[in-house]
Image (cartoon, rainbow, N blue to C red; front, side, top):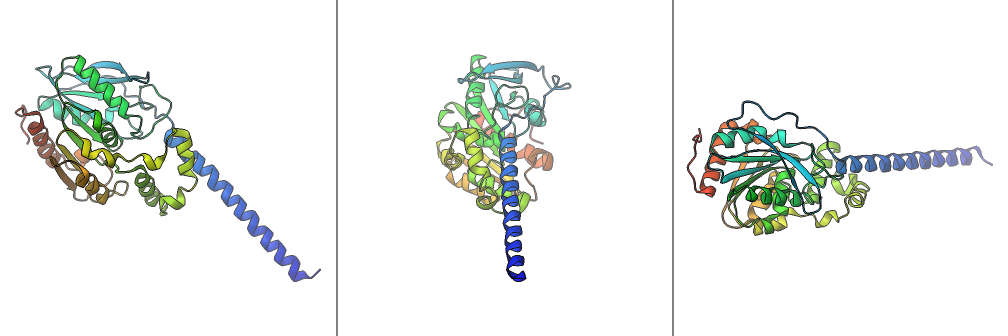
Length: 305
C-alpha cells in the first residue's frame, strides 16, 4: 500500500466526516429554529395600564376552535366605535399600547388582545397569522356583542398578515391599517434568512421549511396573505419602512397593488422592521388618525397634531 494512497483515503474520510458533522449540525439548528418559531411566546402583559385616557378592563373571549384569548378593552364614550389592535410575532398586547393610547385620545374605543400562543392567551402553536385569523374573528364577535358597530383594525407585522388572512370574513369592518405585513410566508422566510445569515431562504431554509410545515400542519407555500388583499371589504392603509430587511418595500408595494381601489400607501423613509409609530410619531399620528377618521366617518376628538 502506498503512502500517497493511504494519505488520500484519510483526507477523503476526514472530508466526509466533516461533511456529515456539518449536515448534522445544520439539521439540528434547522429543527431548533423551526421549533422556536412555532412555540408559544409567553411574555405576560402584566397589570392593567395606568394613566390611560379612559377606564380599561381585562376581557376574555373564545375562538371557534376552543381557545381562550385574553386582552384589554377601553370603550369609546359612545360605546359604538372601536379599533382592534393586533400585535407582532413574539410579542403581546402591550406592544400595541402606545397606539391604543393614541386612538383612545382621539375618541376611539380600543381592544388589544394576545393572539393564540402569545402572552396570556391559550394555544400551543404560533403560526404567524395563518390560524390567528380565527383570533381576529373572535375579537370581532366579542366587540359586536358589546354593541360596537363601527370597527377598524390595525395590525403590525404578524398582526397585519392576520388581518389579510381573515379578509373575506371582515364584512362590516370600516377600515384596515397594515403595518409591515409580509406578503407571503415564503418571502418572510427568505427575507429572514437573508437578513440573519446572508443566504436566501431556499438554501438556508432547506430543512427549516419542511420542519416548520410539519410542526404547523400546513403548506408554507399556501400561506399567502397577499392573495386575500383584494377581498378586504373596506379602505386599507398599507405601510412599512424603506429600510425594512424583514418585509421589503417591494413586498409592501405588492400588497398595495393587490388591494382593492380604496387604498393608501406609506413607505416610511429610513424605518426598519420596527415600531413605525415610535419611529415617526408625528407623521404616524397625522396619517393614521386622518385615515381612520375618513373610514369611520366621524370627527377626530383629539385632533391629528
